[in-house]
Length: 251
Ligand code: PEP
Image (tube, rainbow, N blue to C red; front, side, top):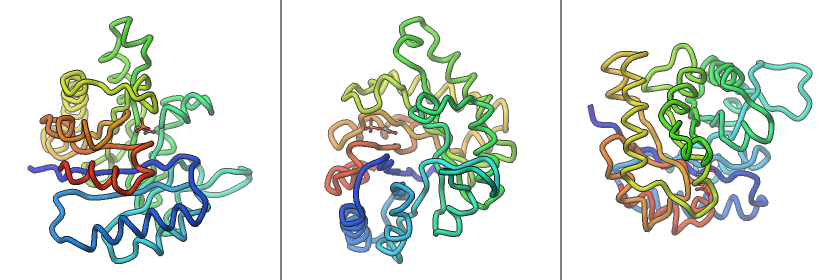
């Protein structure tokens, strides 16, 4: 099975309405300007911009996602957003377990799994993020940490259609440091082996595993060219249309 690369932009807490709609419209124009693009594209704006971005990319094939969701369907959770609300707003995807959520909000694998299961129940696709810190890498714990986060965070009911894994070494996020293609491939291959052990051959063959961590148009081609890297989850470079599109073109 050929896995179609996913180029996903995580805008984090950046952009006012004018910036977000301009960025989304530019990408939509580029997308509509060609046909048979060999990738899927996703943008994940801050929550209040989702409606405007959904309108801006309508008809382009670009999907829109949230950056997080609550594990409950509704209720007294001030400041949170449910997967069902994201779906209703026009989202197709949601990111869960980003290292900034794990750090800033003390999210555990158990929390991430519950959020991912809420996302699937709401009919969203989910991007589950995992990755080691620099300290863990230097202690030789990279594969063990990623295996354990994968096992703890994967939602029940995960399939290649509804779940994407994002390997994001924490030390490479927003730092300008990138895993070498070889370092990234080693971890991606180990994650694929975990998928195979847990979900079987077909799931391992079909489930996309993205790389994230200072990906840019200069390093994307070699990273995405690795056999087990199926696209990117991109932060900083997703805020500039030319850079984000340049990464997509490297597919
Ligand atoms: C991210 O936030 O998921 C990310 C990979 O950020 P950056 O590309 O800026 O390192």
